[in-house]
Length: 289
Image (cartoon, rainbow, N blue to C red; front, side, top):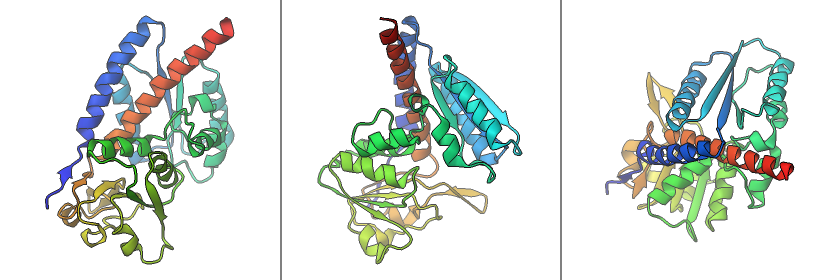
C-alpha cells in the first residue's frame, strides 16, 4: 500500500485564497483585519514561524503588527504590551509566540490576552468554550489537522481516533475536536501501557508527542489516516513524530513533514484573525445602536 499524501501546502493555499477574497470584501464594509505578533528574544525557530505568519498576512491583506522584545524583557514589560494591544482597535488578533524565556510565566501572559483577540485559542475562556462544544475560535494546529482529515475523505463519525500527546496546545484540544465530530477518542502519553497496541486500533492516528520518528509503521493499523504534527530537527533535517518511510507503506493517507500540518496552522491563524475582526466590528455596531 502506498499512502495518499495529504499536502498541507495545497490545502492551506486554497484556504488563503478564499480568505484573500473575503478580506477584500470586508474592507469594502470598513473592516480591516489586523494581527499583532509578539516575539520575545530571537529563537531561530520562532523567527521562522513569525516570518511565515507575516508573509501570510501580506498575501491575504491582513495588517501585520510585529513587536520584538529583547530576551531579558521582564514579565511586566510583556504584560504592559499585551494590555496596550488589547485596547488597540486596529489589532483584532494577538499572538504571543511561544515558548517564552523561562523567567516569564506563559500562563500569566496568555491569561492577560483579551479572549476576543485570542486567535490562538489558548485563553481559559476559549479553552472552556472548546470543551463545552461552543467555540468562538478553534485552536490553530488542531483545526488544521481536522481540515486535513476532511481532505483525506474519511468521516470521523464512529471512527477510532488516537492522539499521541497530551499538550494543552495540540493533544488535549485535538481530542476535543475529534470528539465533537463523534469520533471515539483515546489520548496516549508517556505512561500509556501497551502504546503500540493502542495506536494500532486507530482509524485516525494523530502524532503530537515531540519525539523524532517515534511512531513506526508497525504501530499503525493498515489503512489508517496518519497525521504527523511533529517538527523535529535531526542532523540538519526536519522530521516528524512519524517514521514516514515505514508508515506510508501501511497508512491509507499521511501528512508529510515539512509541508503537512505546518502550513495549515498558519492558515487557521489567518482564518481566526478574520473572524475576530468580523466579530469585533459586529460588537461595536451593537454598542452604537
